[in-house]
Image (cartoon, rainbow, N blue to C red; front, side):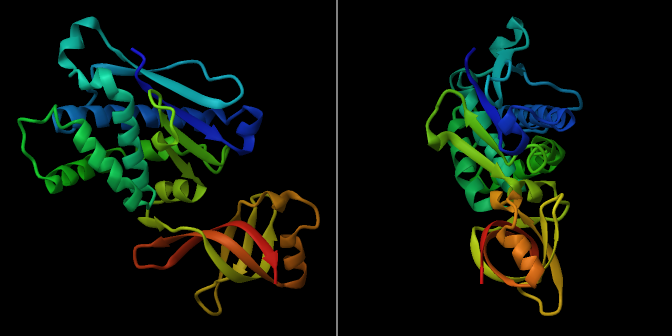
Length: 284
């Protein structure tokens, strides 16, 4: 069976084709949980029982040379279980799983707007399976939210290397190589997935900030809070120029100067700024 999907961790240590073993192990275990729960829920319209496994098992091929990329194929646990699996899972399991993982990670990562198209496509892809059950879109959404709550820990595992050994996680459906069938989880989204608070990840914003200090080993910049007078916060710098000598950030620290930054914010549900991820900056 060729149907499947791929996970690719890109950037940071993975540029040298290495990754921290413990975090990669968390990613594999987390992926298995998210996929297994999703397949049972989508096929049976119920939560899996303790220890229950879907008749198709995810098996990983060897990583591809030149990247930290895992190609996963779906194969039957045993030939006797084949009649239990609908035809749709043979013909399009890769896209179903990609849609499911993308919905889970986008929902968990504060990007509900991006998650919605995946939900709608999942309902279309699995419509044939559930043609005898006329559930409303609202009921289906409520059910999948219950499943989402059960796979939160698995989602955190999937993004464990992001921000540590890699800059991003790229998920693809293996039977379709087009850009349309690609989901990218960056560091701000991974941070939201790992957070115990529900965070909403924003899009790039241009801000003016005053620099107060710098922590070089973990690429953090202490700045005056851009929205609350008299308060300070720590921003994470993802700009490659941060590693260059005498860069714009070290100069701003020396002079307590101003920077104009392009940054992605994450906010709590009440709109409070939780974190800033700086992508680049210029002196003011």
